[in-house]
Image (tube, rainbow, N blue to C red; front, side, top):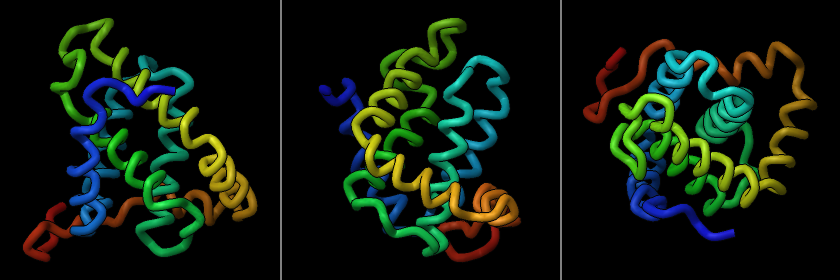
Length: 149
């Protein structure tokens, strides 16, 4: 399946987020945006939770069973989801999330094998461990190392 239009420009940004340890800030922002969207995301809300858990498990060093390219794509897709200025601006009520949903759908299909492996790993965790993966740090370090949140 062809990579979504405009997605490639998010890959270098995603790389910087990963290298600079900015994953918690990204996950916090995605959590806030998805919570604010109510029912507009539909079934993708559950998939977003899986992606958030995957990123948190990777960031904490608990799960490394994902290729670097798949992780980069996941982070880039989450950045795309966050961006208010993408192929279809989010401000356009009713249609602003169509491209976000398309990018997330592409991600889920393209990396389905690796995401299924993570789902199996996640399912083998206790409910308490699963919930812990969805808990973000109480404060997110800023770029200068100080707490920002």
